[in-house]
Length: 164
Image (cartoon, rainbow, N blue to C red; front, side, top):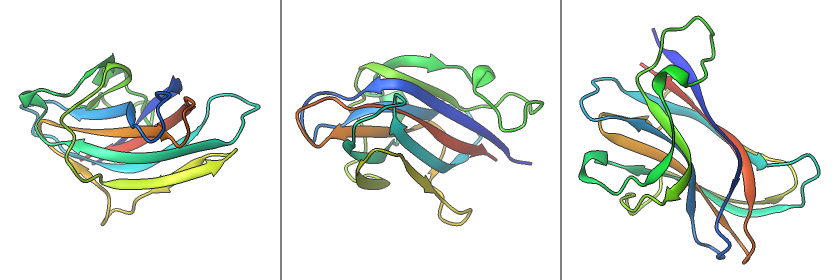
């Protein structure tokens, strides 16, 4: 039976360099875990209740070998503390992180998903069962934000993932 979890971030700022991506949140499958999961959805929105337009690029990328290094330094969320879709579900295996102080450097060359947004509301992307990006043993999938101008963009959002 699969279990659904949420990796959320709140009020996390991108850098202030136009078109320079910074990681706002990630989901990690540690080395040695035989578990796998898939990303079901991401949503990104403004961090307050009276936002200006968010003029940003959003991408989702993978680090295929976390053990090799380059995964950055973050505020970590343990598997036991990851919010669950069903409250009585057992703890998950995957961990997460947000608010990176050292940016990951080992992302694959080509992103899994990329889009631009210039609006006051939010952005939501959902994948079906057959086309959802998988996260496997010793991998990290991150959501990265880049402002389209030289002003930092502060966002909140969620990565929804399913463990199988």
